[in-house]
Image 1: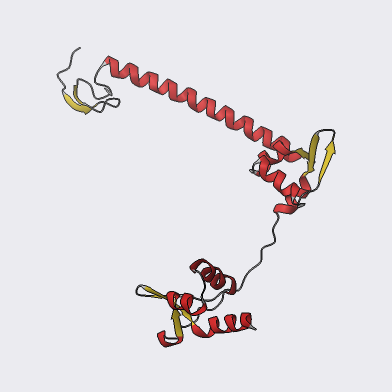
Image 2: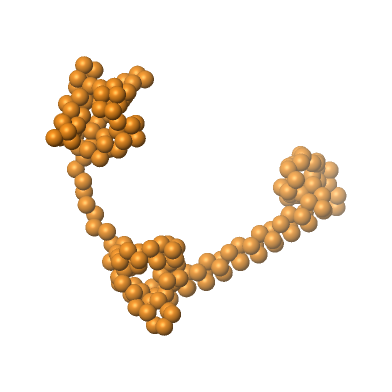
Amino acid sequence: MSTNIRIKRICDFCLQEFTAKTTRTKYCSHKCNSRAYKAGQRQSKIEKSNAETARVITTDLDKLKQREFLSITQAGLLFGISRRTIYRLIDRGYINIAKFGTRTVIRKCDLEAFFAVPIVLQRLKAVQAFPGIENCYTIGQAQSEFNISPVALYHLLHRHGIMKYSIGKFTYVPKSELDVIFKAVAI
C-alpha cells in the first residue's frame, strides 16, 4: 500500500532538509542512515573503552587506599601530585621515608598528616580610611624621597601591610607609615 504523504523533515545526520514519505523517517538517504549508524557504533565503543579505563583507575586507587606503605609513584597517584613534588617534600624533611635497597617507601599516614593542614581563620584587617592626599606620598614621590627602587618599595609595602590607595592615575601611600619605617631604618 503506497501513501501520498509528503512531509518536510531535517536529516538527523547531515541536517539538510528533505521530503519524507512517512512520519518516522529520520534520514534523507541510505548513505546518511549508514553513516549515522557507524557513528553511533563508534561512539558506543569509545564510551565502553572510557568506562573500562575509569573502572581500572578507580580499582587501582581503591587498592592503594588499603595499603599502609606506598612507593613514590603510588603516593603520587593516590594524592594527585607529581613524583618530583614528593621528592622535594622528602628533601626538605617534611616526610619520613624508609629505604629497602633502592626502593623508597613512605607511610601513608605520614602523607595524610602532612596534607591535613589545620584550618586557621585569619582576621581580616579593617579597611583603613583614606587619610587624604596631603597626608600621602605618590609612589614616585616615595621613591625619590627615600631613594628606593620601585620593586623594593613594592616589597616593603607588601611586607609591612601598608595600604595603597589608587585615585585617578596616581597611587598614594600614607606618609606617616613610610616615615616610621624609614626613620627606624636610619637609626
